[in-house]
Length: 496
Image 1 (tube, rainbow, N blue to C red):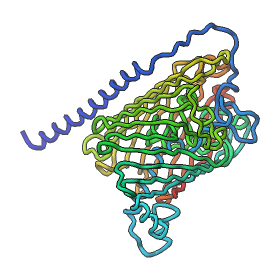
Image 2: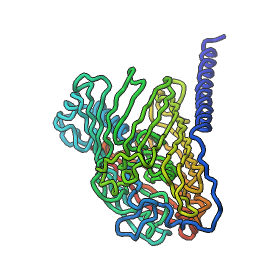
Image 3: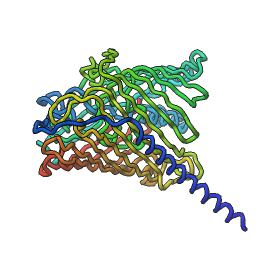
Image 4: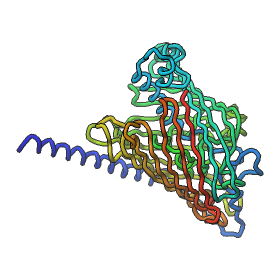
């Protein structure tokens, strides 16, 4: 038997092993979700009392609107929702750009090729980083208009600017594995998805959050056993650790960028930036490819609402409304694997013991829970192992079984991202997606809202991304198709 045939068989066996590992992880995740958390007793008597959909749930509206249509009118959905992945992605890009572009001595060229719009502060930024003090940030700016459909024609702009600091005590003092992370955000603008504009549930831009200056995450992180186990304790945003994928950062709609919308609608305490709760998250590297994470969060309702939380400074720790627990198992094929194309498969669940109003009569019920499944898998790779260029399809599903208390019990989405589609534009991305949410049978006059999104992100420099974006909204807020809206606009992302 020739060596070529033997190599081919070994390659085939390894590829089969990749698929088997992914299938095994899917089965294990499904079993975990099947047994945890326990079902909540939803036995109720039928009556004719129902909460009108416009009062039950929906996207936050801008400040000049009449009372908005969310359970909590001040909450908002904004802030480049997948900030956990986004901050790591931007910091990695900043460091890569710093290494890839040696100084030329020409100030303008060095600035354009540099890792951030603020530059390296004359070398002091790297010196601080070497000492263990790392600064980062970004500004997302969205501009959208609905050319057709919706409640009325309108155009809006919104911005979300976030800055963060990491203090690495391993560098600062020799304390191995200890880090302190802090964030703050500044938001402004109006929401095109407000009920007197497009009036849809899936906000067209993640940037919108009620205007203000916010104190975001503040937590301490300790790694153990060579990073095999990490523990975060402090003021945490749920979507920084759970129910999100790296590929989501290539989208602009809230439905695509962040976490399946049904989860924060099912439980207000499943927070988006800049909202936070007191909490603790443990993450364990079970094997080289399997990660298990669990988190416990306080259920302080005002802390979960940006403005009601006194812009993030409501540090109240309450125990009279129960807790929320989240668990997730993740299987990862790394980008550097020579055989398996990079992919991520995640399965998770949450349970909250807080009180939730029933949609049919407004009375409180104790407890709510939900599940989610999501994955991204590269199917075509340019440039060999380790290259980020290629085609990556993805999907996400979220299910909240307690339909009597969940305005959006089922959410399904899917799409694909191609990095480097245009020759010579290796970092640009082309993204397509469809998002669909099915409304509760207890929400009157609602069916399903579906959104199509298509965009192209051009990285003009390592720190400037420009994203023309198109979205088409079918049945805004699950209502009549005559209000279907075509939304045009875009986003400018600037890395600090």
